[in-house]
Length: 98
Image 1 (cartoon, rainbow, N blue to C red):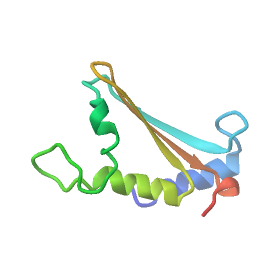
Image 2 (cartoon, helix red, strand yellow):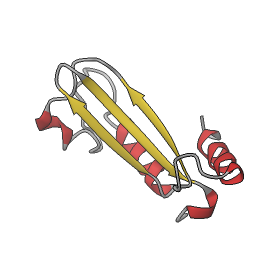
Image 3 (cartoon, rainbow, N blue to C red):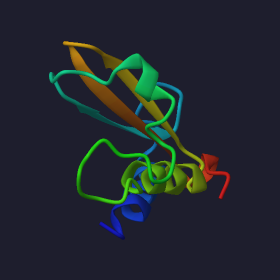
């Protein structure tokens, strides 16, 4: 997984636009589960926030930080009883800020 993002960024940069005129990679992870309660949406990316009995609550905070360090963004959408979607946008080498 360590080399996944740099490899994808190199491929996107070499092969051109993947999303219209935007030279970026979009990865969407979606489920059809219970959704995230609206009152928790603002907390979910904070370090040490967790609803699990085990774990550190660092996973999503680290993921968001890494994506932003690449000049990308992470978009969260969730609706109760419908599901949740995480969309990762990573710019190609030519449009990256890092």
